[in-house]
Amino acid sequence: MEKATFAAGCFWGVEERFRKLPGVEDAEVGYTGGATPNPSYEQVCSHAAGHAEAVRLEYDSEVVTYGQLLDEFFDLHDPTQLDRQGPDVGDQYRSAIFFHTPEQEAAARAAVERLTAEGRFERPIVTQIVPAPAWWRAEDYHQKYFEKRGLSGCRI
Image 1 (tube, one colour):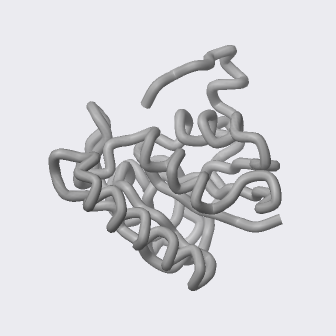
Image 2 (cartoon, rainbow, N blue to C red):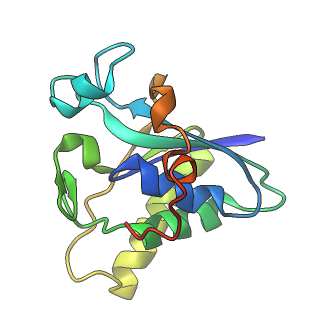
């Protein structure tokens, strides 16, 4: 299994979308990219922790490629919005790719270049592409949030 970590707004919908992809064996919501160790949801929402709400995936690269995960990532949110997604505003909702390997970094940068060249978005892509730092698993009530509440098909 390989790992991939993405931030694309509120992590509940992001987790749901990735869980549905064949080859994604596990998806976990959590916090990353900030300075506060083991933050709580309240600390992340206060903007003091500097963390993004993110999803860490374990995937089988023989079933789904990192490139396909990137395609899904760019399809499920607006990567041109700085520190927000729709009505959700704050640095915890930023668009970010936290790469685990040099190959993931190269693929992420190539995807941004390709999408920019294609003119897919009217505004510049502001997605951060940074090394995956420490990961902090979110509280249990955030895991599989939509599934636990019988929600599905939610569009971010």
